Length: 470
Image (cartoon, rainbow, N blue to C red; front, side):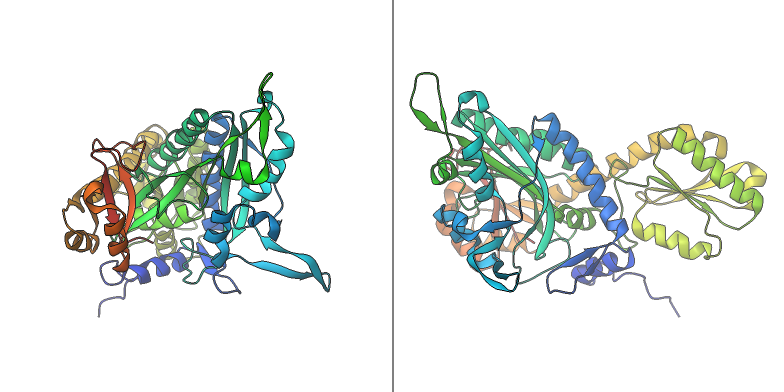
């Protein structure tokens, strides 16, 4: 009788596979309140590595980290009408504290545009105070009706950047810089996901923004996932909060602003982009553990050798973990590391020692081969880079193979059943977009004819990317 698979096969039930993998790879559990999640150490380790890589890029772009309260006076949100209207259905509102009814209800932070602008209006007085570039790592709460771990949860973790500039041109350039130099660089070169960069339609734009730039990734089932966004806020919030600056000898002017963010949703994107029927596949540049060295048996010589190999690899700059838990069967440990997606396993037993070799198992392309123990430190950096490139290539090939050009709404809906459709925005327009939405298909972004990000919705030759989305 055939052994039951560890995970539900993707082809049988992709959502069940996703949930199985989160459970079996010990990434997260559902929290006690509907829609919340408990991120387990291995899953949080992925998020920590994402934070480290993102934070370095954000700081290189000139932003500094700060922190603002999670409780926001409700009156702040009502100052920008479109903003409060967009978030109203998702708000969690606190009406009592300390056993008493509050004089003014407070909102649990859904995003921080309003409270940060309250302080920007105090901090910005002169053109010398600009640009003001602030980033925050925090949690946010948006009451989610259809939760799914990492993808849509009532509480999630993220970074949110907020900036103020003297001119529209400077703000627009900075939003674009975050979009490309921070987000796209990280997602392509670290996550190994070949995202499409584009512009959101007015229907999909962030509440209160004049333009939203997005990064869309195709998941293993052909659906789209919005991986991150960068918004031009214009002067909407500046006018609502009276955030102004004075030029030399001139009247006060309102600042121009941006906001931008990515969240723990990227962990879900990582799973659905690279995972297979054997579990997760973690890109080597992201992995907290790039190589795990396993002792097959509790032989003293074997244990000494795996620890020696671990030290040599660590000295070579490789993020390595030694698994010498020989009280747990080797097969169980190997399956566990396979599920967790560690890029390379080095397996060492008594027979391997006799020949001076170890078994090298590559998670991303698959396969095993014996390798000289003495050659490991010099071979592994190149192998890890090969496997990083393979994940990105597979991501790009899947998107290209499952994206088709269409010319009608019916064809667009048909394309979205298994992948993405590309349709002329001039032909589709807002009316066609609304008709697609009735059938569960959305315009994920608009791109220019050459694939770049257009400067305006109505730019000649714009193409709409349509898909079903998470």
